Length: 70
Image (cartoon, rainbow, N blue to C red; front, side, top):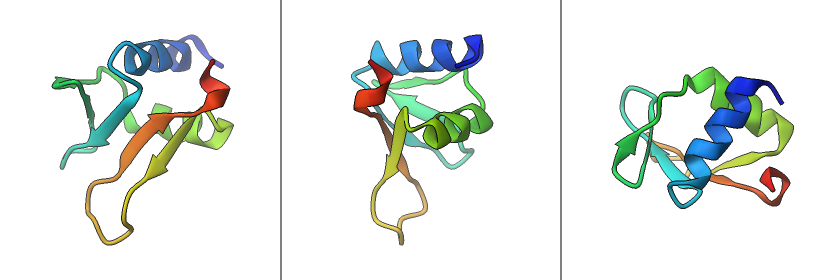
C-alpha cells in the first residue's frame, strides 16, 4: 500500500472502521469527514482492504474495513 492508503486505513480504523459516502463522495465516519480522496478508497477496495456495501438502489454507498486491513 502507498503511504496515502495506509493513512486512509488508519483514519478509518480510528473511527470504528465503517463509514458512509456523502453527496460529494467524501467518506464520513464517526461524524468526521475524511481527508481522503475517493480514488484512494477505490484503490483500497481493489486491494480488498475495504468493502463497499449497501443496497444498490441507494445513492450513498457505505464502506468498511475488511480482514485484509489488519
